[in-house]
Amino acid sequence: MKTQIASVDNLSTEEQSYTQAIDLLKAGETVAFPTETVYGLGAVATNELAVSKIFEAKGRPQDNPLIVHIGEIEELMSFTKNIPQIAKDCMDAFWPGPLTLILPLKPNSLARNVSAGLDTVGVRMPEHPVALELLRRLKLPVAAPSANRSGKPSPTKAMHVLHDLNGKIPLIVDGGATGIGLESTVLDVTSKVPTILRPGGITKEMLEKVIGPVNESKPTDHAEAPRAPGMKYAHYAPNAPVYLIENSELTVRNAVEKIHSDSQKVVLIAREQYADIEVDYFFSLGKENQLQDAAHLLYEALRSCDETDADLVLVPVFLKEGVGTAIMNRLEKAANGNWYAK
Ligand code: TXA
Ligand code: MG
Image (cartoon, rainbow, N blue to C red; front, side, top):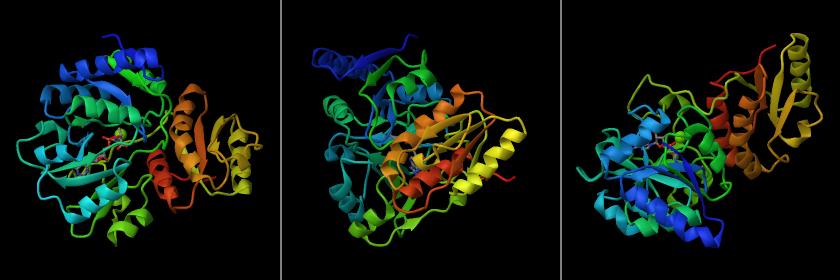
């Protein structure tokens, strides 16, 4: 299969790009498209064969359910039931936007492989103009995980999708770089106390202002594979091992010295105050205290590691506050929990 790229930046090709994407989706194919978080790989959520093509292209484990994207609230009626009031309050406050709500699934409504056999479904209304335009023209719910090969960092540019899925999907709608850069916050509103299963751009503090107390699931809860205990998937990982390290210039300098004395090459992914440390490769996460920038740059930096011949990757940690919680969630997964030890 040849993977085409359709631009929507340009008025003369825009209309044709949307038509091509809609036609493919309606014909049961997959299409990659930008959202405000990361690029998604979409298929019509009521078409089991189309959805199976997502799992195949990504190499995704079948027991990891997909998020369903909608363009209008009314679409919820066809595949969810008993929507709790707090969910409605969240929709009013944060949709369209980077918040996925886990809602009760109406039986026999969506393709079975969307929700991996669970009786709940994750839904969001994305805020990106291209995603919204596609969904509103299509008028059907679209299942869309991040458009990367399973285990790799999520794509924040069309080129990342092409790198991972070239020849495996028919079309990538190119809308430029995504904004937030980390996947949506996943909030389970079917539990007694609403629980964040995956932190993202909509923070605990922002949610609590609207719906009161919110729990955070601990890393040991395996939120990435709900109700599949014991399963833990590699995530966001470059080929070279990633190590977390204390957010201290001195500690990082000492570590780099030690690594070089062992004749190894190192990538440093860090904020700009680290830029003058002499490493083999440095990928910036922006200025200190600009967490939004770090979130925006993180996945591209992790991907860039695979273009180097480095033996290991060091990342000074972030405070788990605000968006820092989401950044650290992804970094802990990329590092598989490992810290650099001399
Ligand atoms: O920002 C995003 O959410 C992106 C863009 C494309 O919208 N999508 C995305 O999808 O990140 P994906 O498939 O890579 O992540 C879906 C997450 C997984 O952690 C999955 O386990 C969880 O949502 N999830 C989906 N349905 C669920 C359910 N019914 N119960 C619990 N967790 C669920
Ligand atoms: Mg993903």
